[in-house]
Image 1 (cartoon, helix red, strand yellow):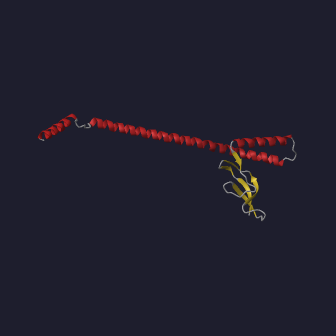
Image 2: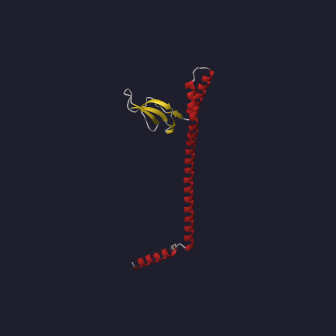
Image 3: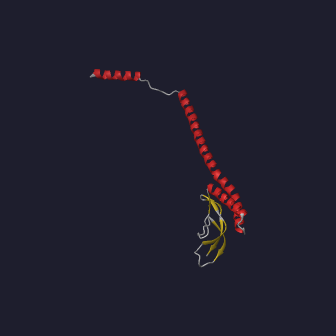
Amino acid sequence: MATKKKEEEIKEEVTEEVTPEVTETEPENEFEKKYNDVNEKYMRTLAEYDNYRKRTIKEKESIYPEAKAVVIEKFLPVMDNFQRAIDSAENKDGFYEGVVMLKKQMDDVLTALGVEKIKSVGEEFNPELHNAVMHIDDEEQGENVIVEEFQKGYKIGDRVIRHSMVKVAN
């Protein structure tokens, strides 16, 4: 048995000598620190760039609808004048037909741009879509029902370009 103990002690000594302890030296530690710092800065810069890219895409996407709405708003008085010219015509000659065709063409262009007319007469008053400029009491009409439209309202999707000017009953 004594020999077995001596054999085990010798094996332990040999194992200790064969597998030396690995110690980190100062330069490797400094290298790892520098590497980690540079890597962290790189990852932060990459994340900042990705956020910047996403933000600019959102900004570009929001500019077009805003600009389109502003331009269309400038054309709405022209549409109103076309309608006034059609309404005030006494004789239905060639000039009248030309004005009607121009108004129809403008309507088609606005429709192609996604502009919709806001429904008003016979509808319930909605302050998000309509601007009430007159109020009447009429027992034949329902509560908050629009009875007359003074100026057409327009919208693109859910965004109102111009509210309808209306007369509301009750």
